[in-house]
Image (cartoon, rainbow, N blue to C red; front, side, top):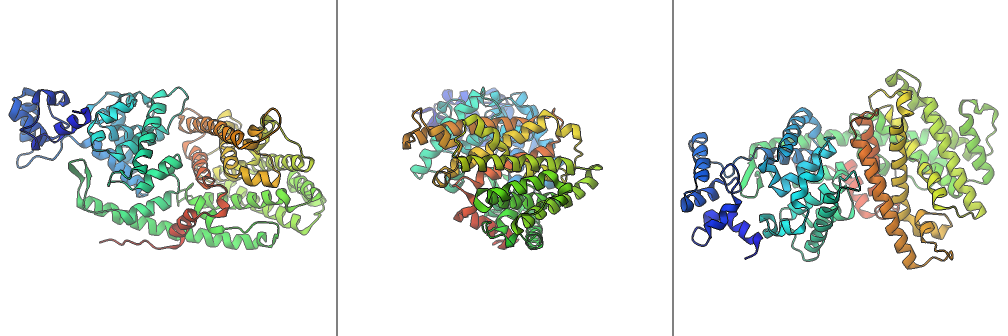
Length: 589
């Protein structure tokens, strides 16, 4: 008999009293005397074996629960970890920060002490590890070493039940790697991903989870933390109030789930009203700065830009979210200008104006487009800097201008490459591309509006520079993977195309596929480095500011997952409409 089946039969021992080999069952007994923390299975085991530890466990339950015993005991750690996951998935975890901190502290202690209640439960251990690491706890992947090999899954209750949720949690845990040396996570990611793909192909995904959720996880690393408001809304609409179960037992009562649902609905309604206000503000701003009059610019899907910002900032950071949205729009238009929207003379004129900034009065605008574009960049940045100066108690405009100067200079370099037909080396390309990806102008101004004080020393610190560097590298590589075909047809250089050129300067389909694999490796490395910086508690940059880098990376990865997100694939259209425009389909019962 397969080991997984044996484990499952022990798990439901109360229903198989006449067919079990009870001596074999004893190996599943835990230190507290129970089988799987199940009073019913342990009772059957005690009746047939008179096992002393099992009897002590049952005696303890009899003293603790006079009238009736729970379906599982103890369940404290599992239920609380799962509760945190529910609160995060419903978009209301911010309301319970202190309670969540206490739960994570308890989980951390339990993992360090190798507590059976968490270490022996595949789904709970994986979820706990992922949450702890993403909340900044110093937790080693060794806590998952028990599940490093695929055989462990097949030999478990979860394996016999074909438990997709446990597999998915292991796969998600494998994604929070911060070092190339974390072989345990690499192994878990490999075999759990393989089994999830097999379940999708064979239509054997567990009923407790949707195939779409599994597909998202496999196709979009960190998908669970991207498109957050959309995910929250979907979870609210699909949320049941009949109680939620861990295997045999309900662990969250109906009244608790009803309260969670009501709170989530209230929170979403408030958030959606704020998103709609932000959209109205952005629509007015675009007209005020006359961006809608620039014929060279692509159509600006303003709802999309606002939606992207909802995935980066909580609603209470209204000004930071607006600033981020404005900078996304401005850098998109500036990028269009440098990629065919302006003549060489106009490009140089624009760069000079940015370099001069407050001293630009002596510089003539060589076209109306230049005047509109420069004044939009100039006025908007000065307005944001004024808000930032009040929050920071110091001027921040010099740093914002410095970021913009670096940005437009790299765009000029890339434009000259195209004009001259210059093919840079990979190193030359990346040194420019990490800045031309526009993450500096987009992210940096909003950092001053998040709340924590950022001194000049902080923004000169290597941690800040590396956060910006790895964010820029990551987004550039993601963009290049998604858009190399378009850029090849338009004559632009791209990291995939540069890698695909062989020694004889000939490109082939096989060389392109090999190049994409290489770029994916570089992307994985930059993602690890960025995550390590974000989770590092010892650096000078405050965690709320680091989260902006990480959230921007995640939404950027989502945006370019199917090529250029500006083409508005159907899933993105649906998400934008659902979050900003459409009401909830479910109301409180």
